[in-house]
Amino acid sequence: MTPISIDEKEYLQCNRALARLLVVVYENQPINTRGLLKLLKSTHHGQTVLKYAEKRGYIERKRAKPRSVGQPAIMHTITAEGKRLALIARRKR
Image (cartoon, rainbow, N blue to C red; front, top):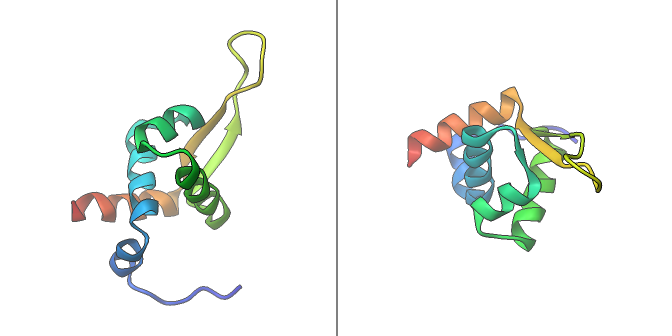
């Protein structure tokens, strides 16, 4: 897939959900999936945007050791590219 040359502000304006997700992860990193979706106040659409951001390389998902018996938590951190877009989105607010 070849990258398309587009202005970052225009890109974020078309992808408001992505911009909001990046700002929330940037301000609260590392954050687990449940906490992130709770802050976004979205479950289904938020999960879709989360997968999109991971696929594009804006965030990274890492498994954390479980606090007790159960599944390990998935922690989200922002990458350098995601941080750049998050800072642009924060300035726009």
